[in-house]
Image 1 (cartoon, rainbow, N blue to C red):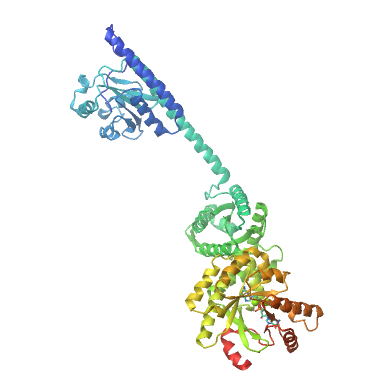
Image 2: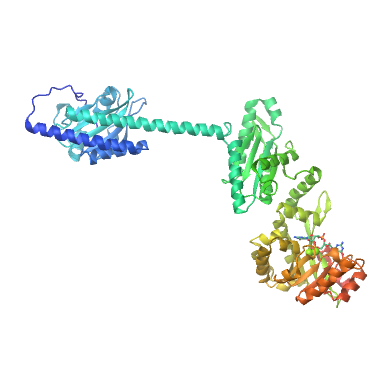
Length: 640
Ligand code: C2E
Ligand code: MG
Ligand code: MG
């Protein structure tokens, strides 16, 4: 609402007043005081500028009894426009439709504009009768006044420290409102409001300044990424959480190769550009819960609060690929290379500083110049580098089908009948040739990457079993499971799914679990074994004798048999001790209703001794070396 520029207050004379007038003036002064006091309470409570403006208008109308109240801000644009910020008792849309300005022009010839320009209240005591409001330009305002039931209106400047922010505009129902005393009190209200606005703005600036200080302390100025300090804090918190919730986490340390050369040849700006691009790529490749930080000139760190070896390696491989894409810098296409080191909590370190150091050490094992990743290994550099390379290769091997399924027959000693076979994985590496199964199984178990291998093996075993069944050969195939597999929540369902997919009888698939795997977490093992057993499959304890468990403990597990470890079987003819162990295991096993298998049967003498002791099944080189599974049928004709 705005009104013709009337006389600034104090311009008119003050004649002798009649009695009724005195009462009216007192009533006005009292409503102004009421408004002033309610306005002060509003100011004290305010925490947000917009909310303050709205609440002040509301107080003016609801507590003061004025018809409407609104707040306009003076914009410092070319037109010096008036922006309506809040209104109660009227609509900001209407006010905006008047297109007021505070410039000294025709558009600025209104009370609001004049109050802003002059810094003094502009009073219209009777809009409907004063000649200054009679012109056609004020027709919308007069109509608005009649519609909303007001006759007087005043615009008060919002002044703070000599500057006018805008105006507080108020309208009253009765003509001749806003006398000298009322205007004086209400200007105080406007001054308080202006002070409140300025105060809130100062507070907001203060907060922004504090945020900037925090940003400088915790964030890298170039990339905007968290810096080393924030990473360390985040890492400590994440380690605490991992400790409490018993899970692992991973820290990746990344270094851009040849960065100094790039800086030297192309200049610092190009170096910065390269870092920005790589930082953006990295940020795009990680999850929201993961923290990417810039921790050195050309170094980044990535905290994976829920990452085991498998996940960290997978991500490192993806990052190496992503970062290998050429980067456009200073009009040149650069071939950026990044080395990534991985360290895991709790396996490699249990405090934040050590984990950071170890991720860094692992990074130095890679060649950032070539790009690649490495897991921390602690010491035996040479050997571990080969192992790490193998681990990386194993992932690819699974994808590329470099693995193959071998099997080794098992024979019933009493009848010499082939009663099944053990499924054994083989890995023919394209460069290193045949890799020792014991070695890469151990590595995969340590690195936590056994699950994909087990899955590959399960698929292969079911598919082979189906092929034998189609060829009329019903042979139980025993798949080895690792300790880690026992914690895989999807394992049993996956196996159930395979039975459905291939339509194979439960008797044709068996599982071997090493004694040490079962002893690692007896309760967890019992649960998984129980669920596996519900599939009606046969379960065997592998490498029995190496895990120091008692047969009576094993009796509590839903297993069908034990395989005596080859380290007892092979020397049993020469060594009395081994013979005693083999003999007592057979005896006790039978007493507990378990089938007993001997592995490592590599001589007729051993076979004969086992036969004498009543051992049920033999497996070993004497019968056959492990062979490609497809050859089993042919081998059997020869055996028979
Ligand atoms: P295991 O389950 O105890 O398998 C028996 C191992 O003994 C096999 O070694 C086999 O080749 C070897 N062996 C059998 N008879 C004789 C013998 O008369 N003399 C000698 N010296 N050795 C014999 P392999 O195939 O190298 O496997 C080693 C271990 O790797 C296995 O021991 C098993 O624990 C693990 N493994 C093999 N394939 C898998 C798999 O698919 N998954 C898992 N989780 N582990 C596997
Ligand atoms: Mg086995
Ligand atoms: Mg074994």
